[in-house]
Amino acid sequence: MMLENKSLELPDDVFHLFRDLMYEQSGVVLDERAKYFVENRLMHSVQQLHLDSFRDYYFYLKYDRKKNEELANVIDLLTIHETYFFREDQQLKSFSEEILPELIAKKGKSRSLRIWSAGCSTGEEPYTVSMLLLEKEELKDWTIEIFATDISQRVLQSARRGLYQPTAFRSTDPKYVSKYFTKEESAFRITDAVKRNVIFLHLNLMDTNKIAFINPMDIIFCRNVIIYFDLVSKRKVINLFHAKLKDNGYLLLGHSESLINISTAFALRHLKHDMVYQKLERTSGTSG
Image (tube, rainbow, N blue to C red; front, side, top):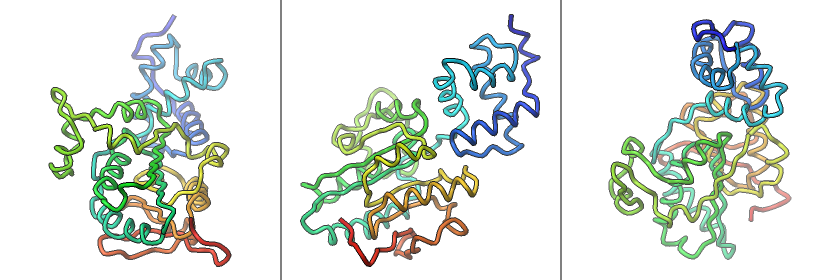
């Protein structure tokens, strides 16, 4: 029989177990200040499973036959998914006005573009990218593939629905809302034209086996994701991105993120509106 709710407190040693498990499974680092956050977020799950303590819940995550399903729930609850359309607009201007024209000029007859939105959350980033691509007349007959991945199944389900509240448009020019969304009561639904370019996939950035199957990309967006990783995990993920980018391909990080002390494999490009990272071209090969 489950104890009274007031006894469901998260002891320090069990918090450390959860912290280590979270890091092992996702690369996300929870510091000591996150104890109350973890307790608050996981309380309902402990109660739902009719367990007596957080310690029992930890053992459930380690040994129960449904551990993988529940672990996915924990990762979902403990990762942050706050985002909105056209976030970090200066970088998006560099993407639209400088990076895309450069890639279009270099592509020649291949007429295809592959972009990865890593840590796509509820879809605002890849859909923003798709809208910007649709604005380019030069890309009208191109093959466009935007791969949007996240560790959370819940946010991916939301992204696939494509239904957004007004708060998601706090940095969006109204012309994009009127052109690419339809009103549904108090919310806005993304149009099929925007959705058509985006493929949503469940992916843990720590899962090197799955990432091995990803084909080379022209551009990778990974914004406001690696700030939650420690140095070891950051280096691992950035090395994977480097391997998955074509020569001269671009890596776009969040404004609070940089590759200082993480990697020297990228060149820092000072563009008109922002600074971005570019994979250096090998002398033995060229980009496709």
